[in-house]
Image (tube, rainbow, N blue to C red; front, side, top):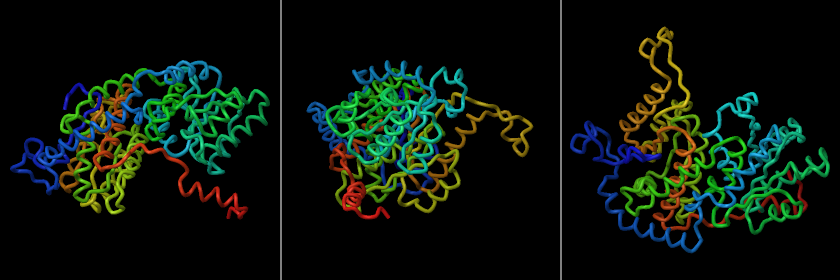
Length: 455
């Protein structure tokens, strides 16, 4: 590991015979993990092949996420337009579903104040309150539309393909409400983020003359953190978009090598791949900080959809999930105990927290903790969790950020995107296949087209 990296991937807790002191190969007290450094060495040749396949796909324009760190036209527009949008509205509603909703939440949660919407305007630097409405549940979407005055609200409708049911339903309902409440000026209250070349949302944006932003056709929604899907809502909330893209650029350079042992993104994917081959097909992404909860969810679904889509045999497919260490510690302990032979953990750790408090020396029942900081407690929590995993024989890969900041979050997303794509390649499949309507959406449409009672 390079101590200057914005993202560090540490596999000490996931490979036998790796580490120092009590974890040295000859005297390792941990239960056997089934994967060693020599297994990683044996994967180098295959890793080089996958690396070349990704480079070829990029050259052909089939894979676009790896080049998103460059401040392209749409990213620049999102950053510049966000200034005027933020000054005109008190509230912003981001209507997104599925992957788009996960991406928006991941960037916003990590890089805005955890109580952004509760702060007075000066505390938000004059930026609007930003709400993510990621469902078409009648009570959820309806409650939002009832609660907020559309006159002071901007609605950002996000749907990558422009044809998925969730975003289309959200858009139709929100547009109808805006038309009825503000009349012809409803267009000023709607923004669309979708594919640049086709889809119903793109057609409606052109027909109505709505402000819109393009998502590259070769970037699926799940890979869209560095497109206007992730960047526009963040920029409106005041996030340093240039910093995010700068961190992504640094990570792209750091992960450009072909060796799975030294490329952090490839290393993460390779260790998960090796453990999956030996039966550990449940991958648990654990946020060591509350700010990374949505990022852990996005990462779990990114890997499951990318690598899972690459595996043809149902028995070989992997399940990915996410939890938060500060909040779910007890449940995590039970899960790791009962699934110890099936589980591999990816732990997102933060070395330094932006806000800190000292535990009073007279804290009741805590004489051993008084005088220490909450950051020290959080670090001890992560270290202790790793120790419990080691004692249980559950492999753990630590993904460490020096702090949660624009550049480190950008670097983390780029690293995870490349890692998921590389993992799919190791599994022998295509991670970035275009997604249309799934079976559930087709069944819903067929039910209504057939005139059946929705019940």
